[in-house]
Length: 312
Image 1 (cartoon, rainbow, N blue to C red):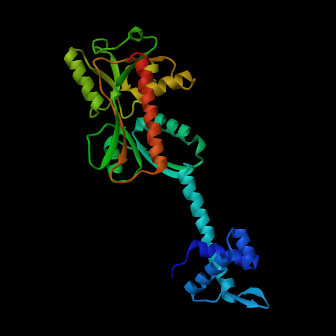
Image 2: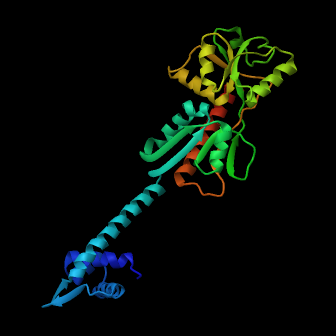
Image 3: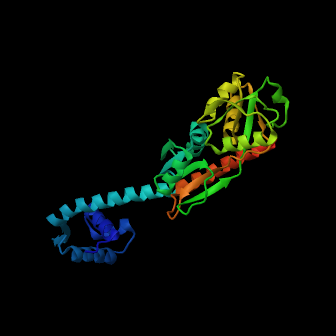
């Protein structure tokens, strides 16, 4: 059986109007065309759908039954068309995003909030994982987008890399706040908060202090940089952290929602802490996922530009 949507829609209109001529006017077609469509439908179904009684078109019992089926199919088709139209217009869809703990605290929720402002029907799953887990989840296609520290290149995912670096947060009342950049010599023996010893920024910091002959005094070991801001605000340490954390902390302070007693300065020699947007390879992204990747890229580029303008 090879039924067409046109046959079903024509049949429904004939049933509604009760005549071939009236259905033809409503559909904007000729009477012979409508008659031919109904005849073709009867041939496909191997059923008589209409009979003529005293010049009137009368539906058979089989036609009454088939009308319910035809209307159900056409309703479902209309729903599908609206859904697909919504996907094309970015009004519907789903985003599954996995990010580092630092990114999920503030950066990704803030970016998503702005992106979704005119997309009330887009659903989002946002979870936090360690960078190594993010790589595996994206490679396994469990998530649409990953935001993580830049990984080694793999065939199982595509990546957009951003060349970022670490900043140093110090109490605004500390003499170090007057410096344009902060070096290992400035922090010789100074209490520090940093990410754990396996993190690449920690290893780079150790090397920078060693090369400068400065004493590396880590007081606080962290899994996420954000708690370190509280220790800095309390005057208990300096914090070496990623650029995005620094930017979001400054933004919160400007809005009256964050620590106002912290300043951020470039750390030299440079400690690289780049981030990447990851997407599964060998699988097309949805329209809304592509749009959010573009949006996220612009957000990261804006952060980098703002921090460079402020002294990097």
